[in-house]
Amino acid sequence: MGKTIIVAGAGHGGIAVAARLAKAGFDVTVYDRGNKGEQGYDWEDAVDPKAFEKAGIPMPPEDKWGWRENITFYGPSNKEKSKVRQTITPGWQDQEIRIERKELYKHIIGYAEECGVKFQYGETIKGPVMKGKRVVGIETDKGTYKGDLIIDACGLESPVRAGLPDSLGIQKHPTFGEKFYIYRAYYDMPIDASTVEDKYIITLLPRGELGIDWVETEDTYSDVLIGRFNPLTQEDIDRVLEINQNMYPQLGKKFLRGGGATELPVRQPLSIIVADGYAAIGDSAFMTIPVIGSGIGLCFKTSKFLSDTIINDKSGKYTAKTLWPYQVAYYKNYGAGLAPLAAFKRLLTAVNGDELDYAFDKGIITKHELNITSNHTSLWKFLEFDPKLPLRAVALVMNPPLLKKGAIVVGHLVQVVLTCALMPKKYNKLLVRKWAKAYDKIFLKPIV
Image 1 (spheres, one colour):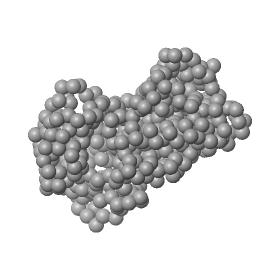
Image 2: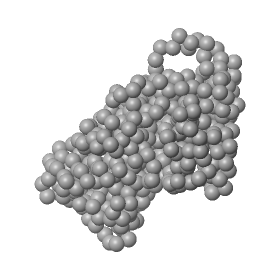
Image 3: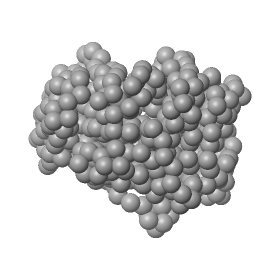
Image 4: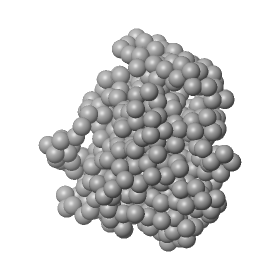
């Protein structure tokens, strides 16, 4: 085919698209800031195993992954009597696999290279190269590279997306409550792991702080994560670590590995993900499960939509119009389900610790709301018949401040559903911009 495709950043979705395009005969190069073998954080990830097949990527070797444990959720006060346990059905239908991120990168990069993808390491991407309103290349600290299409897989704060002209209508940066600051590390296991009842614990709004803490118990180590909607300082990390080490005897004080800090998108998908010569995927398009920030499986699945759209563009022009079917397919299959989930997630940034404790204590929050995994890409997957629903409703009515916030969020949720249904199926610049403004506006509305 002879077309040159540049993938900016070695994001999981970008690599998956690169592999499919290289197999189809495209000239594909991935540019990444890290040196070869440095891709990925020093921790495990949870991935929907079915995503590999949908992306056309073989499953990693069986000795490299295992099944993820169910999670036990606590409210801000960590009341034992009010905890809620997940009940994910074991196996391929709902359960996630756990795999070291570095092993996952090694696997997918190796597969992409077999397909003919070239990797250019040690190049820090600085921004896009524009010709008028068309993206024609990328600028790195090593030079300028031009291509027929630029696939943006640079992540949450992509310098390519941030450098696009305002006239394209693509949001450049997430706002407050739309990204999560996390610290994650592994510590020693000072007790017998078999004595720990709840192996994987997540506390929501711990001690009223805006975020989550988790402690996961393994045979020989503990995995700890501190996540906040506000930036984390080292003092914050040290303070919360000490609290959790005192609270959970399975969390030792000897640091083993990890210790990295990063940011995750926990928001609705980007309203416009294509432009002339440009397509975003993965974190660059905010393609994660809004409640948990998981996005690897989702971007693997989405890679097929983008690669098919590119292959089917026989004109080879790769304009916003010819790339629009990619956005339509993504929203039809995933985005239109994730956006309402993002509206629901905003409630977590609006309630206080007492209100959330009340929701746990009174059974307003149940396993139905917390049985979320990386393949639960729609709010509607949580709508199950619950005979206790009337009692839950009564308890909610008895807490007017919580009821008011919930009602506002439900109103926003309905608006999101209706707006997603109205997304133009065929590309028209004016209609697309009008729709994107209406969609983005919903998520800027205050809850309190």
